[in-house]
Image 1 (cartoon, helix red, strand yellow):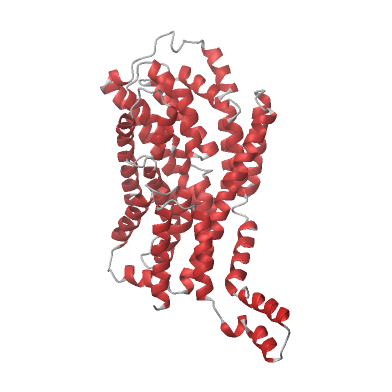
Image 2 (cartoon, one colour):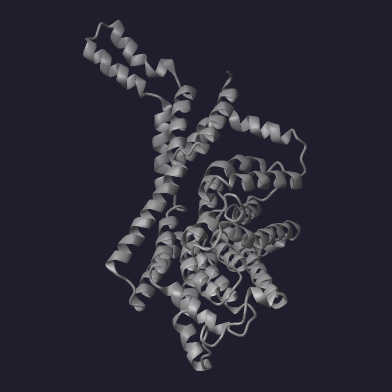
Length: 472
């Protein structure tokens, strides 16, 4: 086989292996090193000292040592070490553990419980008030943590039982929790956007600015749908009774907002504002966010040694997963490109004579399908870089492409049969809640994601207006 054929064979084997359920990060590293050993094999370099020792009649032990040395004297090992070091020193990725720690500490400090209770009281007179409170809470919490499983699970424990107790339609309530929990993928400071920035080379600051309005647009569409359906179909979201949601005086309500909503909102806005207006780097802002999360936990008297240890452990575990994915992906892609695989894909796609719209539709369809078996981190780190070299050919801004991908990845958590958000909710839902009812509740929000993608394509200034305004 020629080198490009070996590269395509390498990609095919990788896809088969991950569908068999092997750990993706270590599969990438193993395949990158094994195929890289073939790609970078250099007989003259690897066995030069060994052959010289044999010719000079060196003793057997010396020959064995030089044979072992030659065996590992392949440039793929140099590449692997350099890639690992590059990931460890990547300034963009340094923000990942800090934002993760901020989210995990907020999750465990009972801040979200206070927030939902307050918003539930504040929105009491709004149609579908409990659903509106749940969506706003999901938006803020998803922004703070960016981890879909954590948001869906916690809101499924807090808001979901309350909505079911208030006689909300099961599918309607399920869709709110699942869709709201996915918003953290898109709304800054999103972990996904940090990973995309590291993979694509796009400025994370401009990505955050570009994602803010699309994120608010999607959240706004969700809220409009919830309120509209609650008005048109009151049975899905009955008005709360005084026993379920008490009415409180305005002064007390303001006090409740000051102690729950505003602290978390201020923390998120401070972190995001510091990044957008250049007052701090993403890493410095993430440090502020982590410290702010700790201070909030202390202020609410919710910081215990057990919660702190859990937050640190989960942060380290998730960060290690992301970083090893980067190491494996960069090693794999370097070998794939060296063998000519990237050039083959480039020539094939450009030879199809696609328009920019057709290319975008094809790319987003592939990402949509990949979202069924794979996590967003694997899609961003492994498969999105395949499309990045093609963007200049079709005159597509990588910032705009990244925002579309972030929107698209919402669907991977909401689309049956592999809708992970639905499975997260099913895991903690009451026994009588059927998975098919949760899937049914996700469908309207899935439609709204596609609507928002169409709106962005037709009105790209929604993405570019804020980056152009701030950074010209």
